[in-house]
Structure formats: C-alpha cells, structure tokens
Length: 73
Ligand SMILES: [Zn+2]
Image (cartoon, rainbow, N blue to C red; front, side):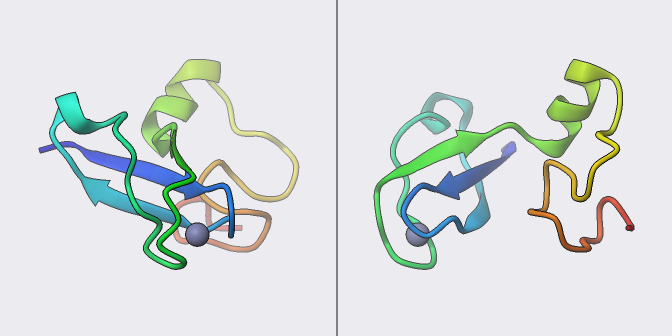
C-alpha cells in the first residue's frame, strides 16, 4: 500500500499515512489536531522528480525550513 503525505491546513502538521490508491484523496484526519482540513502533499520522491532539482533555499518539500532527515541540511 503506498505511503502518502498529508498536510493539515489548520495546524500545518505534516503526516504520512498508508492508504490504498483509491482512498488517497479522501479526507483524512490530522494526527495532531484531528481536523479534516487536510490535503495530500506531493510525496518527496514525486516532488523531486517533477522539477528535477532541489530548491536552493532552506528546507525541502519534506520540511518547513529546519533540518530534516531527508534533505540533510
Ligand atoms: Zn492539524
């Protein structure tokens, strides 16, 4: 089952969930505040291959400017 990444529009929390492809765009509760105002974020892999490069600014699509394990900065 694929792993999807979601972002909460109320509290900004990013979280990941395993869901079947047919459920990927269904509403999912935020794991932090239980809001249903979430949207599916592009996976890091998809985001990388889509534009072919990392942004040179701080952060990557998987973090919000701090350090994270996927971009190592
Ligand atoms: Zn939330």
